[in-house]
Image (cartoon, rainbow over all chains, first blue to last red):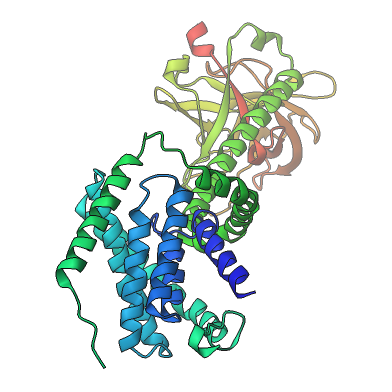
Length: 168
Length: 289
């Protein structure tokens, strides 16, 4: 059940920004739900698992988009690693800290996408890049109070509960 | 317990090759590349089944909450539409007025009294666009002027009878002094039941110095012996050089004897309803002479 739910969440994270959130975009800025989900996954898994989930999510997005393969793979890998590293230092039950963490990790992830895009030869103006990075990060942060309590509870006590191998 | 030794160089080399690999991959699979993507294709096929209803759902939500999200735009649009509606209502009203004016002209043309004297003159149809805003004169402003050939002293007639004469002409408008005004005297003739005529001057009772009454009326002075009775028709006599002959003015409504006993005053009920007058004819008598 846990894996079905996670797969469903990943697919929804791929679909929703292009469909539902397309209509709730602020000046063309939509949330990056896959980054948000990767952060949540990383917060509730051990480091290796987190990185592997990030890698898988990134590959999924790259294949789904069908171009620039590797861009999101690397980005979500970094996002997962960074989220896990921060979670080890910050208290993950504090929703305010989580919101702030989502904001800075999303900024890092979007910055990574921007840099990789520049490396791939994409032409972006600095103003647009900054607006996009902080816009997406803000949108993701806004979604935390709505989504995180549910997901966090589910990871601790519900269907998404994660039990490391040594624990089973 | 032996702690793990971190090989920094190894990690740096790994990161370098990872980055290099990713950049090469991004380059090779960029826009325009013919990179085979069977995984992505399969995902697109599967997810497109869900995406379509989601997009429809999004469309539905957007359409139903449009007013909330774009409240300012909706408000502006509403203001613009209200202005447009007001403008179109005005235009519509104007058109209706024009249609009604056309109908009234038709009625005026069909219902106008037939006078052999008038037939020889050219008539110009005119609409009343204003009435004198002051209380000093009983005048009308019509939408015909010198550009239409109107001249000062041209008689003005309504569907049932005489209205007055033109006193001022501008290129596009003219001012008409109604016969109700004390200054608009008309040489008239009263025709009794036998057809005999009694000549006199019809004068408006709306005069300078006694203009406190809101409505004017017409009166005519006769000698006591003159054969004038209530109900007699009053027509223009054609004398005086302004009005043509036999244009109806009104009917004798009341006759009062003068205190001196020599004269009597006939009060005349005009045939034309001056208050509801909207269209008139200006008769080009001056130009015809």
